[in-house]
Length: 95
Image (tube, rainbow, N blue to C red):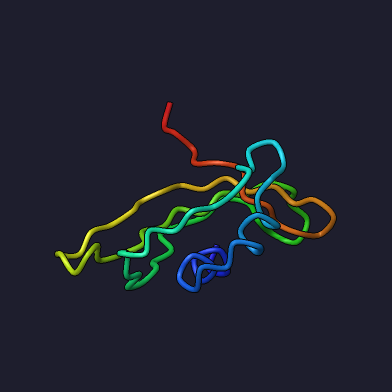
């Protein structure tokens, strides 16, 4: 999760696409040039251990848009491990 956050901060499209599961991967990634990422807080996780093939990471990313007040993106991201690499699948929506 931290590496994907960093990829958003430095606008690394190739890394984001490479770590996105093929079933949900978009054809491209666009960046909002007006966003200034300010920090990432990991709130919790499930799974994701050495023997796991699935896991989730709940986080809050703080940003400023066009110099306006701070805002937050909160998500519980789902990941799966494929070929020893964790791939982002989607946002877990509470059911």
